[in-house]
Structure formats: structure tokens, C-alpha cells
Amino acid sequence: MVDRLWYGRRRPLWPLWPLAWVYRRVTRSRRQAFLSGTAPAQRPPLPVVVIGNITAGGTGKSPLVLAVVSHLKAAGWRPVIISRGYGGKSDAYPVRVDANTPAALCGDEPKMLSEQAGVPVYVDPVRANAAASAYKDNAGDVLICDDGLQHYGLGRDIEIAVIDGARGFGNGAPIPVGPLRESPDRLGSVDAIVCNGKLIDGLDQFGAASVSLMTFESVRLVNLVTGEHRSPGWLDGQRVTAIAGIGHPARFFTALEALGANLEPQPRPDHHTFTAADLSRPKGQLLVMTAKDAVKCREFADDMCWSLEVEACLPDAFWKALDHKLTSLKTTPGHLKEKRTDG
Image (cartoon, rainbow, N blue to C red; front, side, top):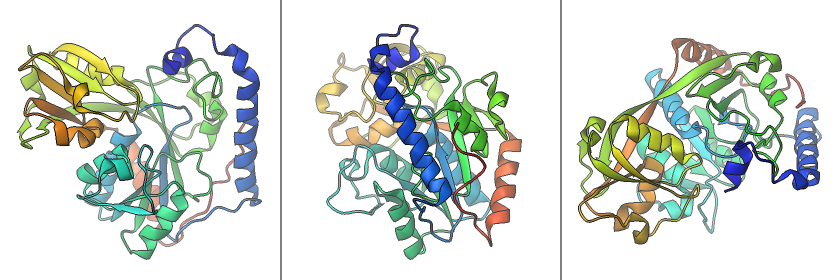
């Protein structure tokens, strides 16, 4: 509901502008405190790559994290993913995610990333603590932070901001009136901007260093019960119930329709706690969900339930720039970026 208000043309939340003004002031002051050293950032002696956004809601960060990890593994790095673990709750942190870690403990995104990336994943609400634990364990030689662009307590060397090319900055207002976590001027201080789906005009006005287009390719369907793989083209012409508990469900439904599925979409809130009732549909009908939702549904799924796995595709220039930056950091990692303060 709020998501529709943030990205629609109506302005029913405008009476909340005093709260939005306070939010903007607090976020700017907090960033400035870390940039000035008043609130020192913590960091391990490893390169840190933060992949995040300046808006609330889904922009496509997780597929980009997986793509970056895959690229770095192929280049000889040993990447480690660190995450806040939103939606999970543990009695003790940090949590190192493994095959036996339930999504309810670590969060759905870390669980999915652990399964698909094949690298260590550490979860802690204080991301700097997750980073410190990964370094102590000698788990890898480069840290990839899933989300956390605004988590300034974690020092970083490279910042990548992801923007939904279709929805952009919504109504352009800060939380809670709009979706902005930070002003678009913040994009002038990141190393790379990745636009999901289509490029956004006018990003050059923020002084963005690099802008790349990211697209998704549907690569496989995975059965939640048997683990069987099938080509996404198998859905062509079939009637499918689709569920998605992600930040922008419409993107997932559009991908299924592009595969030729006759869709019955059932959106759920982001990080939704699924039950068997969520999987109900006409007898014998296929049900397809996201990989993130699948990690929470296997225990009560039937053999007509599938997840669709996607891969992010980016231009060579993006990878070359990332490789160049990381190579320069192998011996001397930097500190919290200080290009400019948030506008």
C-alpha cells in the first residue's frame, strides 16, 4: 500500500512532511559525522564493496550481489557476503549461514545468497561486526555487503548504487512521504550506478562517475521438493499461480509473463512469512515463486511448486572498472569514502 503511494502520482502522505524533514536531517547529519571522523567507521583490513540503494524497496540488489560474487570468484578472489539479515532473528550474532541455518534465523536474502553464491555469508544487524567475524575466520579476501549504503559504521572502498529504472525515485520525497533514504545528490559520491531494466535520464546532474544498465535473464526453474531443474521456456502456455514476497513483485510477474505463462499473480509484502495457506491454488496447477521466497516455503511445498532463478547481466565496462578498482586495493584498502557530503 505505502509502496503504491510512494511511486504513484497521488500525494496523500504529504501531511507527513515534517517527519520526512526530520528523517532527511538525521540521515545527512549521520553521514557527515562519519565523514568527519566524529563517529569513526569500523573496518577490517580487506577491500569492502557495498551494494545498496538510496530508495526503500526492491531495486534488484541481490541478483547484482550474486553476479559480483560470481565474477570475483572467476577472477581468483575469495569473496564473502555480509548482510543485516532483515526478517531473521537470532539469539546471538554474528551468524555464519550454512546449509542447516533456517531462514527464520538469518533472513531470507542471506539464506538464498548462501545457497546460490557458494561463498561464506555472515549476518549481523551491525554489519561491521559481521565483517570483523569474517576477517577473524579468514573466510575470504574481499567483502561484499548486501545493502548497507547508509550503514556508515562500516567503512568501505567501493560503493555501487542500484536504481529501479522503471520506478526511479518515485515521488522524490524522503521517507515516510516518499521512498528516498537519501537525496539523489548522494549518487555523486558512489563509484558506480546500476540501473535495473532501463537507464534513467539526468543522472549526470548528480556527478555520477559511472552508469551501467543491468538486465535479468531467467536461467532455470527449480522444483522445491525434488530439486529438478527445467528450462524457463517450459512455462510457455501453462496456467501458473505466481507468488512473490519481494520489494517489487510486479517485476517478477512481468518476467513470468514474458516466458509465456498464463499468470494468476499473488503479491505478498517484502520478507513475508509464508505458510502453507499461501501456496493454495486450483488442484494440479503450477506455482512459481522467487528464489528468495523458496527458502521459506520448502518445508510445506508440494511437487508442483517451482522457483525461478535469474542472473544479472551487465556490460563489460562495469566489470573492467570493478576489476581495476579492486586490483588497486589489494595491498592498500581505502577508508570510508570522502568524495563529498550528502547534498
